[in-house]
Image 1 (cartoon, helix red, strand yellow):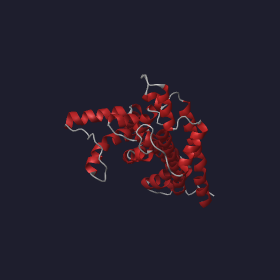
Image 2 (cartoon, one colour):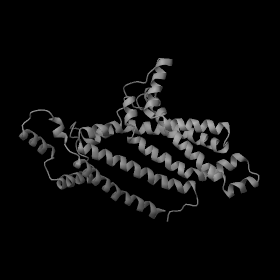
Image 3 (cartoon, rainbow, N blue to C red):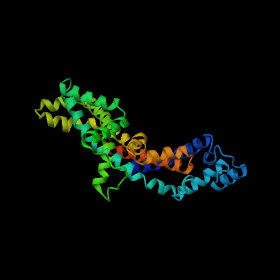
Image 4 (spheres, rainbow, N blue to C red):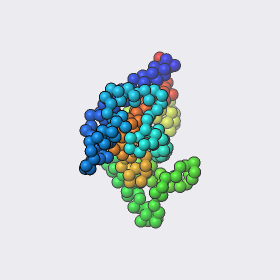
Length: 315
């Protein structure tokens, strides 16, 4: 087990280096840069543009820029934003807590609905409860999260005369104000999230309930609740945990439209703004951050498999 953990941790390094190289090359292949965007449509002399590029280091050969950036990364220095002039780590750190908290709340909401409803749909297969839950889950897949968010905002304003605050408040300062702003986006995102997990829970549990060892447990006279929870659900959770983990990693930086609807300045919106402004250091840092989140989440899920299924051993 220890050898497996060390090996996986070491494999993260070439994976992230490959992401860094690919991001660096792709961004340089896109026509235009931040200097061209700043002076687009203006009659600025070419020598001014050249001096600006030299000041930002954009006049250097690509391999020199890449070596400089990798050297900075080796010292945990992500550089400065070309657009704002602030340190990239500061730009990311001011927005990461919001995206992380939203992802955690949406995940808790999704799991709280997905697991019990998925189990009920599987145990009560082809009954009215199963059909109602399947309709509920299909609705979550069919309706976009941002549209659900808009409807939630309109509904709370129309029926309750209340709208979420526009200014983000950290949870350490005022938990009530913080949750009042994040609860609606968490519900709108978590609904779709729970629909995916719910359908996966139902389908995997139905497969497990048809296994021979489940029939044997029932033949021994065990209670149905014990059979479902202890014998069937634990083995059915492996693909469900995988889906939940991947969705959680996606939520860190993939909520651009939802953040726009609820006026949340998170990682997703920051990445879009960075791409729009051709802010190379900020783009590279954000992509590397999101790749790191996916890699770490996958690693943690692999370790969770061992506890869910005793038959899995890493050696």
